[in-house]
Length: 290
Image (cartoon, rainbow, N blue to C red; front, side, top):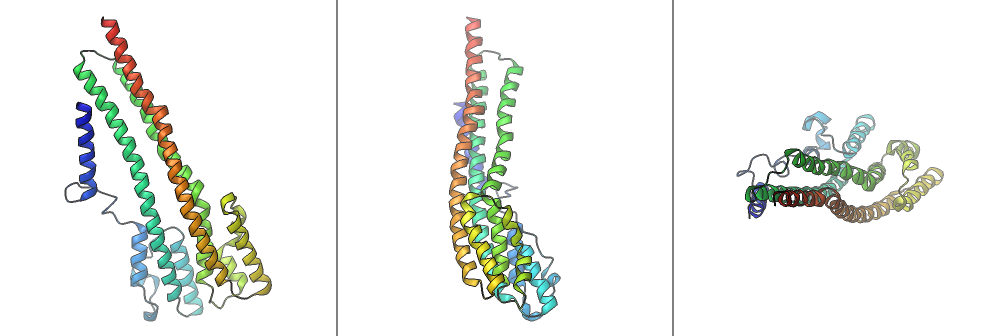
């Protein structure tokens, strides 16, 4: 009964926490602005026709590779003149898509932590409820051992999440950066060698992820063809962007499935054994009293 009350109380608190910041303070998922929003606002306020400097709309917020692309465009504008408004609009559209991706990522990560928190709350609600109802004194050191074992599982979770996020999305981010810079500089009067250098295409050699190998090879071929024969690479880059967006969605699904495996693994290794260990200790003490 006590476990049920604790469970309902935890759920009620989380619902209120997510529903409105006026009732529960410190809701960082809703009220705290992130660098992506700041950069998007900066891009909305920036006007090339007013000859603004980077500081005119406030200091440029730093967010992933998007800020670096903006800085490249601003640097070229100062050196060579001209307007890159279309490139910034295209970059802002990509930034909005990235924000949606990060929002979904945050939701599934929060769901993962929420489920772990509920499991811990139910376990300890049952432990304290059982100790309160049954007149048996389980050693404090044994309870601490159970808590430490669960704490090990909780501490392992962020490392596993970071590892798999880097595994599935780190190389995708590198390719996105190259494609956005190439697309932004497609009409800039620079030599193709300078454009490819600014895009950092040499990073492609470091990408070993098999699921992205066909995109990497196509991008290498596009760069080589551009260097050898000149011409525009705009259509190739647009096609690669569509393909990479598809791969990103597929990797996101893989990441979700991996999270499910992680949660089941943590439950099987750290949380369920803790629950069973307490049952064993409780029964053992009861049999001793008999």
